[in-house]
Amino acid sequence: MSNRHPLQRILLPIVLAVTVSAQSASVPVDKETVPAPHAELRAPDKETLDYNVEWRLITAGSAKLQWYTSPVLKGGYESKLHLESTGVVSHLFKVADDYTSQMSSGLCATSSFMTAREGSRSRDTKVTFDAPAKKAFYLEKDLKTNQAVKKEVEIPPCVHDVIGGLYALRSMNLEPGKTGQVPVSNGKKTAWLKVQCESRESIKVPAGVKKTLRYEVFAFDNQLYNRSGHLHIWLSDDEEKTPVQIEIRLQFAIGTITLKLNKETKG
Image (tube, rainbow, N blue to C red; front, side):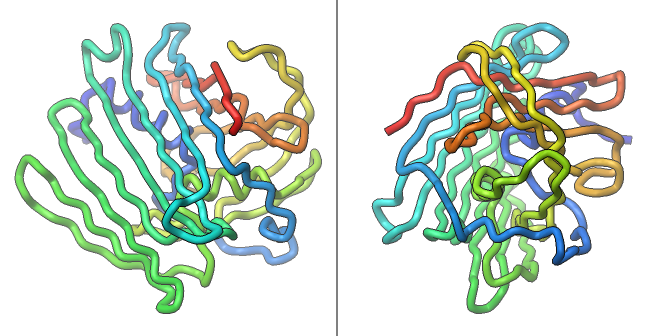
């Protein structure tokens, strides 16, 4: 039985929803369904996306995703994600997580670093991606106990970290009914995330009414997670493909968690 606080079980899927993270065994690759996302990559030079996180009709937290060209990697990119609980949820179980990553011009991951402050837990996690060696090296340190976990996993020549995977999805140009796959690694596991474009929808978020394309990411039901659930992402139906809304539906005890775009800043 899990020893996690009930609010932690609620908030951890929020991290998944924001980052589309891969934390389970690999998914078999069907080469016929894999488009070439890098051929027409349209990653912005700079943008900031702010989200409201809702759970059971209350505000549970906020998320800020920053993306910009790297001052260190020539032609590459960097990202920052800050996730924080708010309101009554924060009083019961405070979460303050920060995730940063670096990647090449093709969104191939080079490194990532996460500081996780969740309730009484405090951990730092670093992943180094070695493309020539086709390996990712994972190091997690518990700052309370000073215990460390080290792992390494095989990766393809170009693999995305969790944020790079989201931006790769934005460059895939899938039409309703079409399916694709994105290679993602968090340093512990490497997985091909299957995604399917389902339909065009107009939805209302704090940032306004948006025309979108709705995708399902097959992350649950013994894929990324053993539990049953559904993960949907709504991207704006335009050249930007901005993530407008992210929804994760789990069993009744947890329910539905939704991230809604509150504000976007380009440039």
